[in-house]
Image (tube, rainbow, N blue to C red; front, side, top):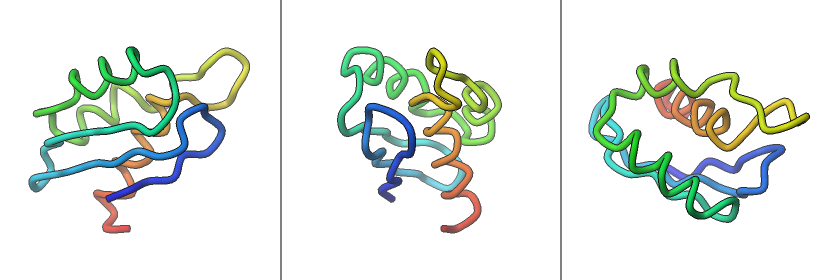
Length: 81
């Protein structure tokens, strides 16, 4: 699934799932090193656990962040969108 982000430097997130387990995450754009780290940390994690940890994180004065957008993308995957 490809999720188009809103309000962040990254423009998209590609997510591969196996049931409710995150198999891979790839961000397009954004802070490459940080986003590789986030991707590595959530790989193998249950989507709900990642959502619980990442949802609501803000970047500076922005109302969202790349981790928050990943949480929203995972919610969309779980909702079947």
